Length: 260
Image 1 (cartoon, rainbow, N blue to C red):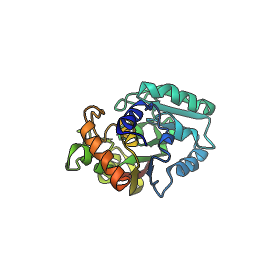
Image 2 (cartoon, one colour; image 1 turned 120 degrees about the vertical axis):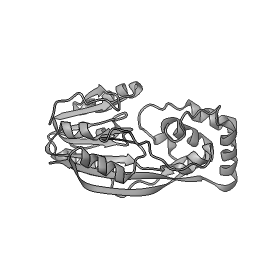
Image 3 (spheres, helix red, strand yellow; image 1 turned 90 degrees about the horizontal axis):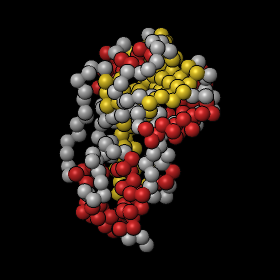
């Protein structure tokens, strides 16, 4: 059986680039939303003429769809992900550009009939509206308020759920409420046509999985390092060994909006 030291070292050593979570197989699980984002994405890209994937990560989700239009573009802010995204999306003929999460999109007005984003850090609803053609659609699966708060509270102590609400009336951040997201989308001139939310069970079967998750999903415990949280990680390791997997719940919502 691996020791605590071995597991912590393993969790620290796994690369964090991209959004490939296959390493977690057998070590952590997460329920998937009932709406099936990848399937919805595939349906919409098959009918689109120009698609933009905002904050694509490593491009893994968009690369999985079977049919895409001739015009495909994607943005990503984190430099280590750029080459991964370009490699994954090259078979689609996609243009991948580096764009900061809060920046204006470097595309002309009305350039796309489909804009998509899975788990964006920031949503600029005004920019989504601007680059969409009249009648175009924005489809996004986002992280809801209080996601994985059980793990946050375990390491940082209990705290109130509070979304980071920007002053900009057309911007939302990861962890926003569905009410806030819908209100800001509509303030930017979009019509919200679908809005769903689910709490999804997660299980962490060893402390290495916890460490890697916190290194990849950095907003769960801001500023996380193994050294800074070694004592709490040791306590959580003991809990998992005695009682089985640590259970938390991710909050996810689907929002689809249309430009009139």
